[in-house]
Amino acid sequence: MRRGRSGTHRLGPSLLWLTLAATLVTLWPSSAEAYPWMIRHGYAKCNSCHTDPSGGETLNSFGRLQADQVLETRFGDDTAPKKRREFLWGAFDLPSQLQLGGSYRIMSLLRVENVEDSRVFPMQADVYGHLMVDGFRAGGSLGVGKVPAGSPHVRPAQITRNQGDQFNLISRNHWLGWQFPDLLVRAGRLNLPFGVRIPEHVLWAREATRTDRESDQQHGAAIAFTTKKFRGEVMGVAGNYQIRPDDFRERGYSLFAEFLPTSKYAVGVSSLLTTAQADRISLSADQTLRHSHGVTGRLAPVKPLVLLAEANALLQTDREFGYVGFLQADVEAIKGLHFMATGELLDGGQVDGTPAIKGAGEPRLGGWLSINWFFFSHMDFRVDAVFRQLSDITIQSQFHVYL
Amino acid sequence: MSTSDAIRTAGRVSAAIALAIAVTVASSGANASPTFPGELQDVLDLPCAPACTICHKDLNGGLGTLATEFGRNMSLAGLLPTRPSTVAGATQQLEDPIGTGFVDQDGLPLCINPPEGATVTADNKCDGDGDGVGDIDELRAAMSPGTADDTDVCAGPAYGCGARIEPRSDLDGGAAFFALLAALGLFARRRR
Image 1 (cartoon, chains in turn green, yellow):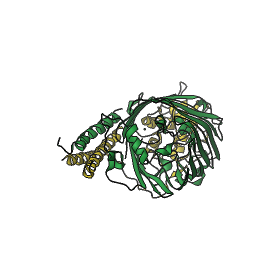
Image 2: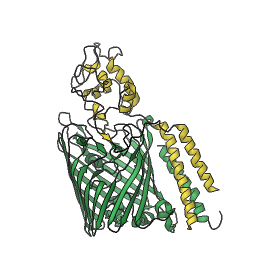
Image 3: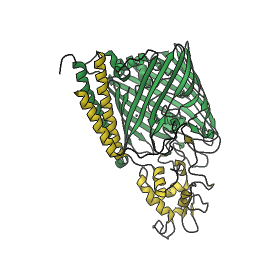
Image 4: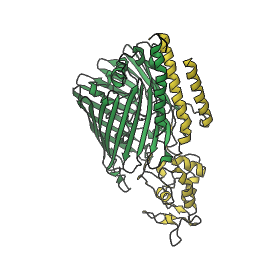
């Protein structure tokens, strides 16, 4: 190894091996985005690190600093180059008004009882950005997605119009806004403010309320506020204009508010009510009123442990009363290495005219055991063992790179 | 770190990511399995992949969520959860239960007796919704075999707001292999 280039010279091969190792492990057997367990570090307010006031996607410069300092495992190197935390590992400088980012995520899904049906697929390939000039703000994402025909995922975020299993250009969010002191007013396609903004988009609490960040965003206008003890967002939902015809567009409101008595504890409430002429998921041609109301909690009683909880009531036309919730314990054993246990419960309500089944008229239980390792700058690897009643046991492995 | 070092580092990082992507794409083709709607479309040469709701209560599908007699009939005829390859055999049984041996000890089609009392057509084809048209004939006409009101199985929401990209074949293993070679070449060049 030659003098003068040793820092970067070492970096290349080790980076390659780390990347290869993670990729191969992924192939053999779900970002720095919206990690509610960052409350363990006293970061209870999402806008400390994200350009979205409710968390997710683009990091601001402080978020990149924290990702570098508290998120990742360090291998005896506490003096990582400052540039490394920047967009594309500091390949080039960006003006201070512009933040760029991106996420690439590949997943393997192994069905323990049916190994031959296991799959490997790219789960996310997005770039995103945020511009702030004085009070004016603009943000958005652009990516590609490919899912089978009929999938409830990715489709609602499509820009291009392939309805089969071809690649599509997608935009999960895009918005324009104005920043006031403690207030952000914006309009566009936005993440719905509801519940705990966790990265596990297929968790029942996100699926049943249709509030995940994968593709459940809607067009509308929102006001977000952040004060010392409170934060929240209220959104008027105008419908998803990347779905047609208009009958399938849901209109109503979604809101979330959280009280933070200390930097380590937070309790919140969520509420959502929408109506549509037809339902996108059940394909019912009848007018569908859907609403969810619930509570959330985040607490870090001791630094290695964070507890996240959410419970929601579910009400929908043509269904009995239902409910959904989860409890997750996250233990950061060593810096960057997380062990998680999650329990979830779902009864979406018995559908009129059909027998009660687990998850629709009867309670259905699920559990996740997860390991998430932020093993290198801008990279993490995650394995989840998912146990759900009425489902095969699955091992989900994912490798994630954020730019 | 100087600007040139940063550029070199970014180059190597890019090469490593390209390599990971190439390896992933190369293997995904080998491991990907078609889904039930896609398999039904292929087997019956349908104009679209029918919605999951011809069998399930909603688009999320999943075990224990069968909501139509057609879905139950397919299950009875040998369709196995998470095994799209069993679609072809099950459709043959529903189309010709007597000819394929999908019968009970009295020689009657097994699809007559699911819990909700499904029936057969005059020519002994399984007819889950009891509208007088066989399930598979209905599907071939793009009508839902799950409901008697002749719902179009290709109806439903359409997605996207802009240009439509013409269908093209997926990346095959060869293309992925060359992508992998290109990534390796890029990396090797960066190392020099």
